[in-house]
Image 1 (cartoon, helix red, strand yellow):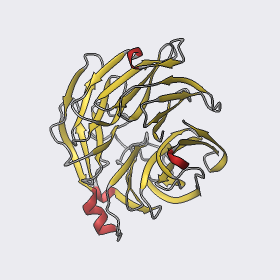
Image 2: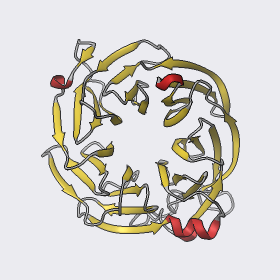
Image 3: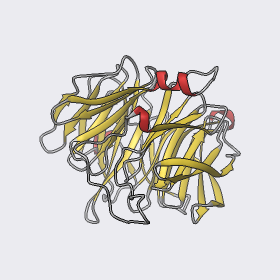
Image 4: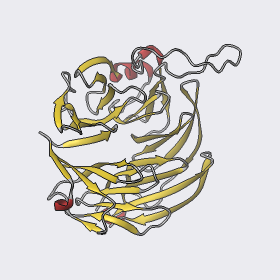
Length: 342
């Protein structure tokens, strides 16, 4: 079955979700399945596996249709089913993306609604503003415990919330910005997002461009090689149009993005072209290298863990396939091996 989502855990474990409701866990570089969660949803594809936990307890979350499931990875069983989930929460609509920040789980829905779950009380709340339609990505802002940013796929808008209050802090209509910055026959739909630890945000578009804003945070002073940090602002300012730039990286849709560090950003196109970009002073300066993904007919998932990168999608005859690549010093591809997820 086609790969729908991939994710790395803090210890390097790799989760691969597929359209048939199966989540497989690997321990790279081994291609042997370490754990597998099967039959998690009849007719519902999986999205957004998220690893959580400490050295004592390792957990993985996954979205499946209208439900979010949590599994304990420290159990002795290799094959787990839905009844083995340690927690199951039902959302009001089909979930597109989830993310964990330790105390809260953020989620997006097909309807455009953005919500958050307090993991201690399991109380669910939704933001006062929502997207006009399908909302596919959500992210917490690093070092901003109250702030979260999410993206709407088809309304081309970025929304930034205080999720404790449910209030909208800022917004940016990327479609309007794209129209004035880049001539393209493709729509500027937002297909992917990623946020670096420095506050730099990047979002990939259907027109082959990456829009990025520095967030005006943690930037080094430009005065005489000073290494002093700027004073932290009262809120993240990554949605300031004047501080954003467009970078053309491909002719096809940019379906996934991932920062490996504050200075390195990976982008993935629908046809499997993986590019590594250099980031300086809050902006993408150049493309360091590009590499293809042979064996993939369509790519739709990307995860980055240090110098390890995994690309997942659809192979020949609709088979689920993912490629694990290693980049030497995050400069160029060093090695790769291909794994059939079926």
